[in-house]
Each structure stands twice: as structure tokens, then as C-alpha cells.
Image (tube, rainbow, N blue to C red; front, side, top):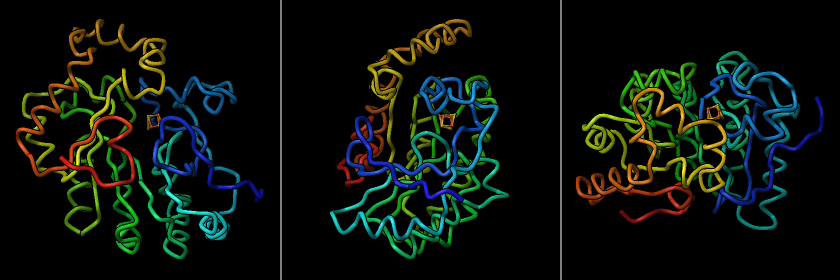
Length: 270
Ligand code: SF4
């Protein structure tokens, strides 16, 4: 096993986080809108994004030491993960994310956001509880329309399973949020469903959330994909504004965040 580091210092979009943590390279979910496919980390194998994922070549038992060393210099806030999903299908067999959570239970960072779209996260419920206030699980729920989910992210877990997972975590006392990121065409009941599901909701879109003011999403052909399927009116910055207004009206006590500020580690006001 190589001595590669787990924690990568962040810059740019992940405001409020000192480090990102990616247990895998590549991602089997291969979402159509994923801009990681065009980054060096998505291109180096020369194979289509979504067709491969492999464990990062680093030793999970070293993470606790890394956290401890960085903590000596100041607070450590970790975005887990930024260029893959920590609950890859492979994770069921390899348990690397689980080992990293165990290391964090031993040497907790000041805060870790577990960002996933997989219900496999509930396997680690007890470890997440151990981390207490230092962890929040952010479940991607871009829509409540399963036909839309299948269209844009055919290899990602079904929405119903994500809803169930988020509920289970919340009922077990783990801090959770629903990440509507990027917002996709949805039903009129989406806001009500989100409010019932999570105490904290973060909404983002192609224009604010792709790290380039929407240029990466344009280059990936997202405008064309919406148009091709009769969904052109959904490719518009007003879609986020509309949902945020609905959410704030429906649930003034909920924490509602938008784009990078919504993902930040610090608590938000509604
Ligand atoms: S789960 Fe995340 S990293 Fe993986 S393809 Fe989808 S957006 Fe990209």
C-alpha cells in the first residue's frame, strides 16, 4: 500500500472546508451532469466516466494520524467526497469508507460532511452516531421524479431507497440534509416531500454549482439534453429560485441553503 495522503487541501468551490477526502478514484454512478468526468482525475484512465472506480492507493489506518497532524495547525473540516461517491457499489465489498469513518471516530475532525447518493450509507449508521455533532450526512436528491432520475443518472440508486436511507439516519439521530444538487425537473409536491424528509435542505443548480458559472454544464451538453427530452424550461436559474421560495414559505424553521454557502460546515439560518 502506498503512503499517499488521504486529506487533500481544498480550494475554490468547497468553501468552509479545509480538506476533501476521496476514498475512490472514478465513480460507477457516472451521472450525466458530473463535471469530474472532464477533470484530469476523470480522464487519466482514458475510459468513459462511470465505467470504472478503484480504491485510492493509500492506507486507511493512516488517516487518524493525518487528521491529528493537521489538527495541530487548526480546525479540520472535511468534504467526503468531492470527486467520487464514498458509497460506491465497490464499497459494499471493500469497506474503505467504513475504515475511514472508524479512523475518524478515533481521531475526529472538527466537522465532516458525508456527501453521497447511496443508501449503503446506512450500513455505517452506528459509526456516524459515534461522530455526533462532528458529522452530517448529505444525501443527493435532485428530483422526486424517478423517470427523471433514470434519464439523467441511470446508474445511480433509485430515489425511494435514498428517501428511506435519509429517514433512517434522521430517526437514529444522525444530522442529515437533502442536497437538491443539481436541481432537476420535479413534481409540484417536491418542496413538501423535502420538508418532510430533512431538517436542512441545500439547493443548487448548473449555473451556480458547477464551479464555472455554468460553463462546464454547457460543455457537457446539459442544455441540449433537457431540450431533447422536452424539459428545456427546466434549464434555467429561475428553477432554483422557485423551489427556494416554496421551501422558505412552507418551512420557515428549516435551514435552507443555496449552492456553496448551503454546503458549508457552519449552521445556517432558514
Ligand atoms: S455520484 Fe458524484 S462523483 Fe459520481 S458521477 Fe455522480 S456526480 Fe459524479
